[in-house]
Image (cartoon, rainbow, N blue to C red; front, side):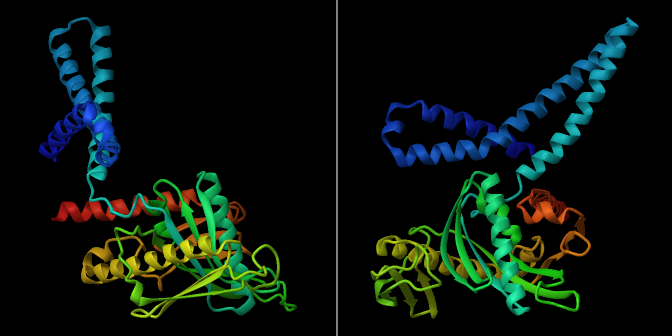
Amino acid sequence: MFDRLEDLLIRMEEILSELQEPDVASDQARFRKLMKEQNDLSPIVEAYKEYKACKQAIDDSLQMLEEESDEEMRELAKEELNEAKARVEELERELKILLLPKDPNDDKNVIVEIRAGAGGDEAALFAAEIYRMYLHYAESRRWKVELVECEEIGIGGMKNVTFMINGNGAYSVMKYESGVHRVQRVPETESGGRIHTSTITVAVIPEAEEVDIQIDEKDIRIDVMRASGNGGQCVNTTDSAVRLTHYPTGIVIYSQTEKSQLQNKDKAFALLRAKLYDIECQKQHDAEAEARKSQIGTGDRSEKIRTYNFPQGRVTDHRIGLTLYKLDKIMNGDIQEIIDACIAADQAVKLTKMQDN
């Protein structure tokens, strides 16, 4: 591990030296690549520098204890020694986590699809609530959200909704939301007061750029039409809605949330690229079944990951055995504690696997 850290330290010095070269600023592609590598390496290099400083502090304190006879100075040296040793242990674990293989999609924006499952109208109402939960969460992270497509029902529910989240590291966080979300509560339409169980599915897909996925024009049919729905901004008298049909996969994308046909077309193609990229990622996951098992619910979307129990005011994440009694806050977008726990559990599994190897 430490040989690798020394190599990364040397690489960081090389990057900083290259960034000082006059011709780098004029080559934007090279400049961006170097800046990204610098940003990726910075947390590791800073932690390693602190680790080395703490190791030096340990040596200095031990030397002082050997040479110093003054009791007050010896007590001070012992205190510094204990602090440095404790920090070294923390930094060793931190460095192991920082050196874990990084998901290449972690820095990407995401496309989120929410679909009502079992439970009819109640599932559609819950889908709309989970959509709003993610909107509030994205707002707290200062991420930008764009609606791609939505199928609403008259009572305020959503049969399905697809939206994009643009934000630094969005996939690294949102990927833990993929799976089946279950709600247990008494529906407003239930006169007998019985608790019903409904489900929705959430799929989180990394946004794919054109360099990631090439789409052959011969494989696509593009239809334009008038937007439809219950009324409002999306419904107009021009052919602004766009439907894409991808012949090889049978994927159909419909986008009508923008007033401009060009904007709807761009959104539809972005979603199609993401879905095709996701298919490739799933194939890779299937080929690496053992590696996929080590992840905390980032692969199998049929997995029941979470239950929202309204009568008891609790949310349980089944993957990590976490139960929180703050349902109202969570439904209002306060999901960071759950995500942090999923990340920690995921890292713990990967660290164990790395040590076993």
